[in-house]
Length: 547
Image (cartoon, rainbow, N blue to C red; front, side):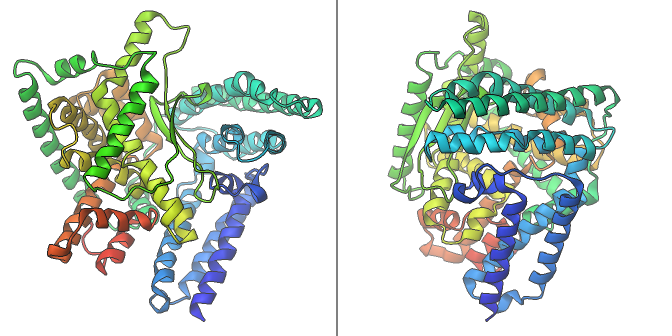
């Protein structure tokens, strides 16, 4: 009876949730019902959603979780964290008032052209219907946002909007013209023109308020602590979190210095990194080199029995489409409920109009060692393997929908250490050097997130901290610092990795001689990406100490 009550309540919640956020449902692959629909951002709807989450959590609290079946007990905990996370973003953080980037996700129609999940004409009709909502989205953003906003959020939103306009104006029309339906093309040209005008209107609005933007961005200790609890299910004192992060920072820096001495005793870390960057992919070989790396990694993962990789592999390495070129490399998977299996691993080439010197500088970011570490994170056994496990093996619809930042990025970052532990590229210390260097950036993110949002650290001081402790150049260091102003959870890469390592150690102790690494990873990934305390309870029977 209780199980049926919980199932009915959760199903009704998810259905209504997707009515509030149809783009989320589309991203999961639920195209038939939700394609062409957009989130409504008027203040009355936002207030209704806040009430909706509160009423659900109140109803959920009346169900005694311990009396549910094992499967529903864990689904109960997962969906509760999911609802608390959404409520935190709306009510506590107040994103709709303070973050101009929140609205931009609804101005992205690239999902309708990236994959052939339906005939082009159907996808274009959905795209056109979505574009028709752009003016109302922008109007709501202008009404909802505070008159004075954090300058870094405004500047980043303006960059994103500029890219959106370029996509709508330059990249999208050639795809649309592949259809022979002249009426459809005419309808698109009309909707696209109005969509561009709406996005440009938003850009002009932000440009107008930019001079009055302020340096303040910190969410404060109470909100930060609530973020950990509401979004990740963690009850962690800030002091304990920082202490563990510093411990990891000093340990990793010591290993990096030892590795640097093994590579070149007479050179500094910066000098060694610059030498590494001379070994990079070329313009003509970028895709081929990356594809070969992935084949090598997949073979290594299988030979070392690190995790069972599902057979439904369809990962294609391609140059990043122009409208997505904001990262060097990225994985792009279909939704967990999508019938398509094709995923893309995008690597971003230099632009054709750049000078030879600019192109050479760009491809230095693809040094063979760092690109390997990034590809482990993104593909094998990182995000792509995790996606396959969720899509093909996770039996819970709730677990497929509600995921956590610490688990998603924690697993991918943990994968980097896993490959090192297993001996991947152990013959060349430069790979270990690249892994440690990337790890330092993630560790510093965790420290910086805490310091900027709870201890009044400035962007300038955070930039210096990245330069000093992660050995970064000033430009990239400042970009990392700026990201921390509007992404207070970006320390979750390291936090998630540390919690997974602790879970692995505790599970090994519990299992004794019966511990099997592959079995551990298979179990870990088959439950989706729940709050890691919930994962501890699944595997160990109790949450215990997470760090």
